[in-house]
Length: 319
Figure 1 (cartoon, one colour):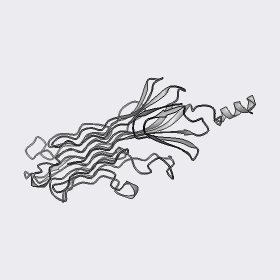
Figure 2 (cartoon, helix red, strand yellow; figure 1 turned 90 degrees about the vertical axis):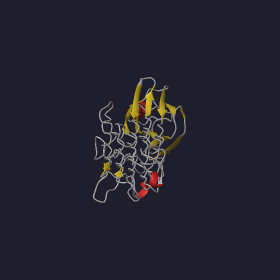
Figure 3 (cartoon, helix red, strand yellow; figure 1 turned 180 degrees about the horizontal axis):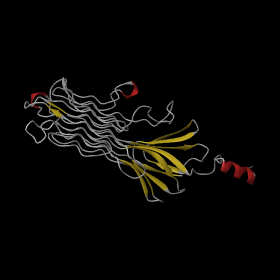
Figure 4 (cartoon, one colour; figure 1 turned 135 degrees about the horizontal axis):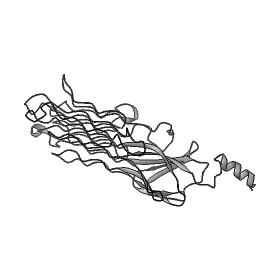
């Protein structure tokens, strides 16, 4: 039995377990963009596409209104379409119904294709090489990452790298790497030209990792750019430790680009790679009561003093 003074002291100290949280921390990842270019292999491959941008990452705190839902949306990755700029990844978000407030991580932009500049997005897609006789014979720049928006989400992502064409021969083309949530995509560059690497992603600093539902590597890595000739493909960034092969590597004449890993917001590789879907994560201290209800595809665990939730498909949560 609690006395009134004990209850008041516990509430003031944040240790009264029958109360809902007043705020929750979140980590939202948009869907990764698809690579641009062509999926045709062999000598008929006529161009090189830029890598897809990684999904934008938004980190922050949301105010809780008890007994009203927070709607969770998990963005899909862009699906590669041959002979085209890569489709964008979809946005991921948390929407407070009571407040009418949305916290949104933008989907990564698709990589450029044959004389097109990748548009801006959560993370910018890699630029295409263009053609030697185009208005930009050196190659097109990558798109910019999302920089200026609500809820202090400047820096959700970085720009993609520029593509490169070095001569009139159709084999001399390389796509730029897609931008990541943590750094710019690399431009295709001589000497010994290589397609650009994708930009690095970002981790949720301070989130528990051991035995946790959270992936302890990087989210939102950009896809590598594609190349026209064998051996000129780019690489997705983060090819060390637990991130190996998570981002889409770029393709070339004998090997199509790879798709980004799902639920990590990875960009797809140029010349064949689709983007990976995003994710939404929420946590709050376990001194507060569990949620009233949850829905969607999610994993939850209580550990290290936190209640942790990770959605890989859309749903909601009520506190």
